Length: 82
Image (cartoon, rainbow, N blue to C red):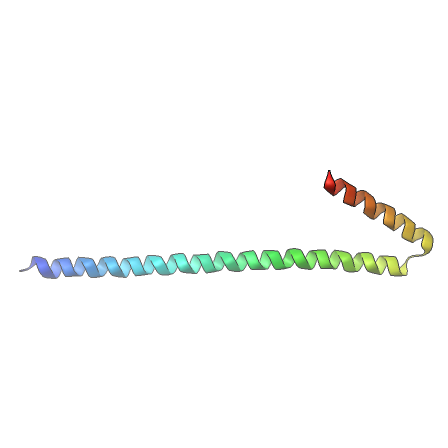
């Protein structure tokens, strides 16, 4: 008769432990997904900032400077393709 309460305690302890492990795994996945979203958003913002700086330079530049900037941008774009 004493084995039944011990078995019940073991089953309850196992269920409680499994629930704790499930919660920790679920929480860590949320943390990783949140980090991925932040990195993705920052990469997008970085590209937008680069475009904004390029457009500002082109608006403020003279025609000769615009040609130089355009050549620099072409070279950097070609290097990325290689």
